[in-house]
Amino acid sequence: MLACPVIAALRRPTDTEAAIAGRPDSVFLMFGGVKGCGDTVSRLKDAGKSVYIHIDLIKGLSSDKEAVEFLADKARPAGIVTTKGHLIKEIRKAGMKAVHQLFMIDTQAFGTAIKSVRDSSPDIVEIMPALMPRVMREWKAEVDLPLVAAGLVRSRDEIALLLEVGCDAVAVGDPRLWALPGKVGAE
Image (cartoon, helix red, strand yellow):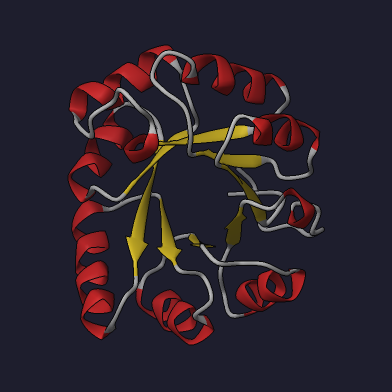
């Protein structure tokens, strides 16, 4: 999946330059609108980054099949991140990797999320918030898919702990945390 286990989570335009200069080989694009996201994706790809567009956060797009097809045709990212399980098959059909983002708020959400992932068959699962090592370990025991932890990560120690308990990568928005060395696997 990733040569660097840290994913640059880009929340604002100024993050783009830091991501281009930074170590992470993958980025989650979480800002912008339909008009400019193709240019941002192109710049990041030209810098050797794999770009995953968070479709739920791009202004001017709805979370539907047509938006997936538009992104596949115009922006050509490596993949799409979404909370919408019904889009996973459409993303994969369009030739991109599908990242299913899930929020773990309680025990019931854990069970519902496992069912949802088994039904949707994404390529990668992103769980938020990240700072739940026990939950991440239990998830890896239940679901054999690459796991990205995200949300509320503020230190290298937290990243190291999440990788230690089985997460394949950690998405973080702070460029100071994008330099963690290590390998996770091949794209």
